[in-house]
Length: 343
Image (cartoon, rainbow, N blue to C red; front, side, top):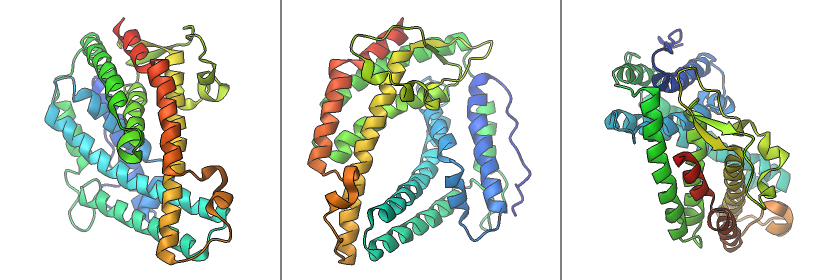
C-alpha cells in the first residue's frame, strides 16, 4: 500500500476549477484502490475495468477548452498531455481486451488468440509503468510527495478564473469559430486514408461531444427544439436515451449555452457510426497481421468467420466518406451547431 492511499483532493472553489478537481479526485481514488488490492491482476487492468478512461477524456476535454480561453496555457497543456498519455495507454488495453473476446467468437486459430492475450498483458504492464513513471501514484521510485493530482490541484487554485458570464461569452466565441473551422478541416481530409482521414475526422468531432459533457453546466439541451427535415436517422430512441447525450444540470451561477437537442443527437450518430467503421477496419487489419505472424490458417475465410466485423480498408473509407458527406456536407451539422452556439 502507498503512502497516499488515504489522501483525497478537496473539490471546492469556482465551478471551473471544480470541473477539473472532480476528475482528478476520481482518478486518484481509483488509482489508490487498484494499487491497494494486491492481486495477481495488474492494477492497470483494474483501472480499465473501472472505466478510468472516462475521467482522462474529461480532463483532456477541459484542458483543450480552457487552453483556448487565455488563462494559463502552460498548465492546461500539461494537464492535456499527462491525461492523454494515460488515456492512450488504457485505450490500448481496451483494444486488445475487446479483440481477445472477438477472437473467441470468431474461432480463430489458437496461436492468434494467444498472441492477442499476450498483447493484452503487455498493454496492462505498460500502462501501469506509465502511471508510475509520470508520478500519478507513489511507488518505489519516489516517496509520493507532490504527485500529479496534488500538483495540478495547487496550480488550478492559482488560476484567475473567468466569471460564469465572461466564461460563457469567451466559450461561445471560441467554439463557434472552432466548429466552422472544423467543418472546413474535415472537408479537406483525404478520406481514402484510414488513419489520417477517417480516424482523424472521428477524433475531431468526438471532442465536440466531450466538451459538452466535460464542461458540466456550461451547455444545456433544448429538447423542445424542432429537428431539421429528414433527420429521422438521428432521432432513434437508442440515441436520444443514450446516457452520454444527457448533459449535466447547470449550477445556480452558471450561464449555460443552449444546444438544440437534435444537433447533439446527430453528432452522437456520426461518432457512433464512424466508430463502428473504425473498429471493424482495425480488427480486420489486426487479424490479418497476427495470422501472418503465426503462419496459421483459419478454418474458413475471414469474411465468413468475422461476419459483419470484416471490413477491408477500401470499403471502410467508402462508407466513412459517405457518412461524412451525409452528416457534415449535406446536413451541415457543424455549421448548424456553430450557428446555434452563436445566437
